[in-house]
Length: 459
Image (cartoon, rainbow, N blue to C red; front, side, top):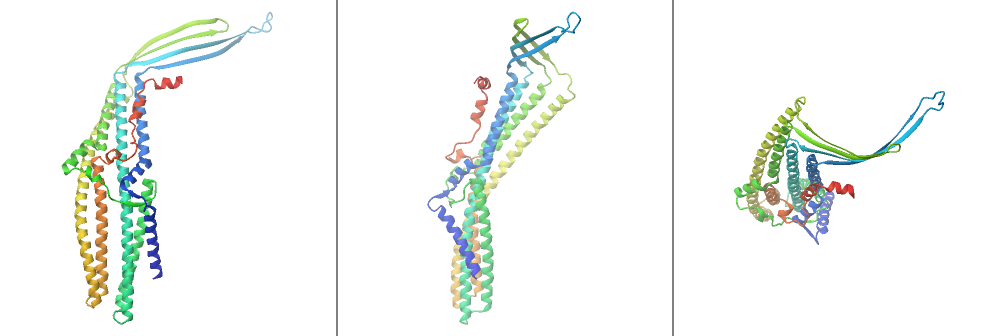
């Protein structure tokens, strides 16, 4: 018995310690989401991927812009004649030549291939931006799930600790009655068995809580404090299922992402087909030179143009077109799949809320009835009309009902946030979190600066 009492005491200390950490400052769901938004590595990685995708726009745009270069060089040359009778040392001469100049190259027409590549790059950057929003929703939903897992875990630990205390009291009562001749050894054995089961359930709840707290800290970056599941984000949920579906189909980042992916694939097809057309380029050079023997050479220059038309490339051009067509079809299929998945997620979350409401109502009734039954059975046991087993069974039923209420309440909160995520509204902006929203839009605008690279070189 000493081991069981110590176990309960240690669990009580764990709960009290967790409560004392946040007793002065309760940690709401909104606060946890705010901290997690700034901490989440997955969200930061998505932002970096979006910035990387934005650079593809600059790379594509460079295809229709000139390349201008400056060069300076020099060389040293010498020659020596064959020695002869009249000139035993031979003839030796040397000179140095220095050159400097500018070069200019530009593709003036490529059958609109570059324009198609720019459009593909812009659509790809848009895909990456929507991927940030999608990752944001996944991260915030995972935080809510971890938050509620810790909160419900603490409630279950407290409940099962209370259950163990009850069984300990019943075991002592059974022993006392046995000592005065009013009970039986069967009552004692049954109470001992229930206490052992209660201990096992309690220890399992403690282990589960430790795992949940570790998961919470991974997402939030800090240990959970005194958690409180109350929130006002249910106001973002529309009044009907159809309204929720309509909102999801219009604004969910996964759907917007799939639309941008279709545009990127279409532009890729256009670029592949443009490879069959002609390409025209112009080039020019201007420079000067100086030779230590001949002196200055003055200015010299060259201007030229070239038109090329592909005739055969070993089948590569046709393969690229076919591949681009396949990718375009695939993007459209992926978009249809995204619509179906989002619709399913909305319906599932909506049903989850309705189910949780019904379970909460039923669990509240079961808990109220279970308390009444337990009190009555204990009184009847004291009068001799019920047994210890009846009391233990009544306590077990009450505990099951209370656990059901905890689980139903947890499921209600998770289903609410799951519906917001399915609608595309589980974002820092929609939730009103006090954070700087992660976005690559400004970065996209910066890389569109035509002369940024030239200014950087000049500086």
